[in-house]
Image (cartoon, rainbow, N blue to C red; front, top):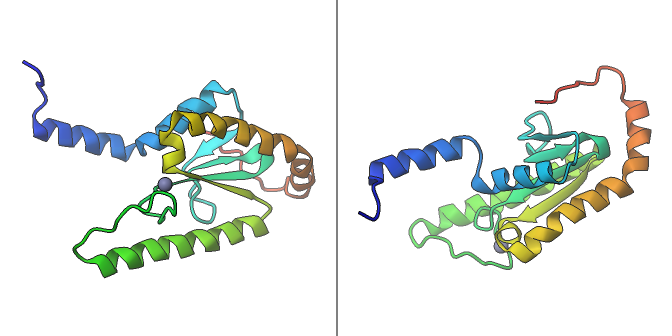
Amino acid sequence: MTDNLTPEYRRKTMQAVKAKGTGLERSIAAMLAGMRLKGWRRNVSDLPGKPDFVFDSCRLALFIDGCFWHGCPICRRPLPKANRDYWSRKVESNIRRAEKSNLALELQGWQVLHIWEHELKNPDSKRLVGPRIRAICHERSEVDHEYSNRSDSGNQSADS
Ligand SMILES: [Zn+2]
């Protein structure tokens, strides 16, 4: 017996996994935990674009962009042949929405970092993600003080 999972079971498992965030997000979460970076939150719905991760201490908003959904220029994932117009509009609107939320976040003093799905799938480039985050946070620790002094009233202390 090689495989005792029925297709139905497998489908349900996939759904359960999706409900908790994509595999990529979970892999990043595990990496951040391993790096002992503090003060990050996941799936932050109270900020423009709903960043996948934010680091409040250095005001860094991190997005993990699916190569298909965000029209990655490196992977150039082909659109499905059926309803090509629909898909291309969908990808276009994802790109435009991301641009808008980048701007909105930057106006609020956030540094925005987008990471492509393909960067996380390749172990060599994945290894660089952590140090990049660390470098940005380090660089911005002074900026952080400015902002935290300005906005320490009515700040939410949510940390799940
Ligand atoms: Zn890509």
